[in-house]
Image (cartoon, rainbow, N blue to C red; front, side):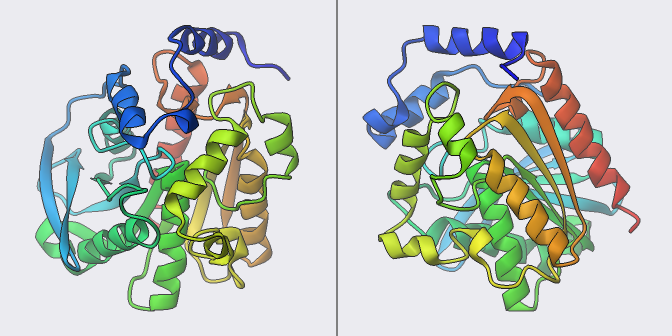
Length: 308
């Protein structure tokens, strides 16, 4: 199936900006381009506040979204996408607001340090450290420590999946669920979805390879399951998952493969595939009908597991 009409118009508008491909400019220029693009706005909430969370020898800026005051809430810790190179809390503000209001969860959006200035395992350590801090400070945040979920889109989905793996290995951080939006989970560029969606849509295979090189130190990092969660040896006893994937996305097949890995390991996993859309569609609420559908599905999933 081709792109649906709304996605086709969006793609043509994006191409009309004549921005250079991300892999042809410096990370700083890529970030400037990202910051200059219109961002999704979101609903008003009972409370939105910036907090700084200590992680090892640094502090990680985060933004906490609270849909309802004076109530102990479940929480979704959110890691933004952008190939570990671009993106920030400000850019994902609208997504976080929609997730908080729609799910009834508090949402903590994490401004983890970016690559290539901070390479693996730095961004993952930031995300894991923030998640562990939330668990240890749940009472102070008025958070239900038994209902801590992690989530993210693209590279953020990679970090969320890796946080779950690390939490399992750590043994001291019980997580409730993972919400993965077109996550990158492996470095196999020979998958069919990489070949079929190599050049024509929002994310290209060449750009994805470039992002991996910014994040990793050496090629052997690609063998590390915290880098490529599909390479993890035993996916049993991981948090239940909801994985959303897009038809026209190089990352489609690895999202499907991860879902099947979890099912094979007796982990509950829900896979939702959206036809006619491309990588990045999730944050296009108000532009793409399927973006709204995907947000509603995400929030419905989170609500459905609150009492389980």
